[in-house]
Each structure stands twice: as structure tokens, then as C-alpha cells.
Length: 166
Image (cartoon, rainbow, N blue to C red; front, side, top):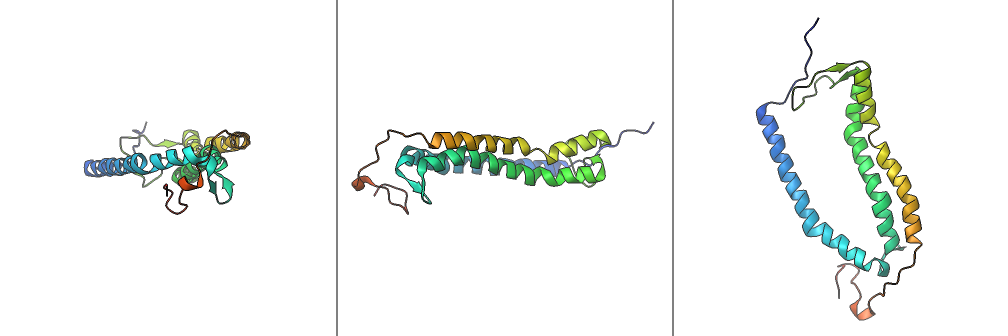
């Protein structure tokens, strides 16, 4: 019986470089989210009934962005990130494909097991697409609700370009 075949692993220096890059990018993304995006989204949500985005009511844009846009964006990211490696697995009939480095010792799988992994990679975005389709109905129902929010008077109106009180 042949000894098991293992995929090529990254060197210790490459793994450290990936970890540091992930930490830096993660910290940067978290800082942007906490310091810029979250306050902007919270401010927009507070005043959404009084706004229009490209001629669409602000609450409608908020619901559709949350229930349709976000899952659809994640589905597109999953399709791009996992689709190509999944197709390579299906083409070669082995996982991981030749020339692909891994972080820890990983046995190479052939046959049906590799095909299943390839199909799962290629189809990883479908639950998020289903969530976006389901979210469309939810967003449409929520956008038909009439709120009781009172919009500020024109003296406290929002500057359209600055998105801050005048």
C-alpha cells in the first residue's frame, strides 16, 4: 500500500506573514467599521424616513440594503473566492489541487471525496443567494409599513452633500 500523499505546506515565514497581514487588515477593517461605517449607518437609520436615495424612500433603501444587498454581496464574494478553487478541484479530481499550498499537513483526496469538496466550493454562495431572495419579500413587506417618525423642520434639514446638520 502506498503511503498517503500530502499537499505542500507554507513555510513558517509565509504563515507568519499571512497572520500579520490578516491581523493588520482585520484591525483596519474593524477600525473603519467602528469609527466610520457604524456611525454613518446608525445616523442614516435614525433619519431614513426623512431621506431619499436616488428617488427611493430612505426606509425602503435601508430594508433592501440590509435584507437583499448584504446577502447578495456576500454571495458574490463567496462565488469569486471559492468558485475558482472549486472548479480546479473538479477539473483535476483531487483536493487540494496541484500547486496549492496549505497551512497544515493535509492529505490529498481523490475521487468522490474530492468531487464533493469541489461541488461544495462551487455552490457555497447558494444559501446566501437564497437568503437574498427570501429577504426581498421581507424588505418589500417592511417598506410598505408606514412609520410615525416626524421629520425635522427645514431649519434642521440635512445638507445633501455633507450628510450633516446644516
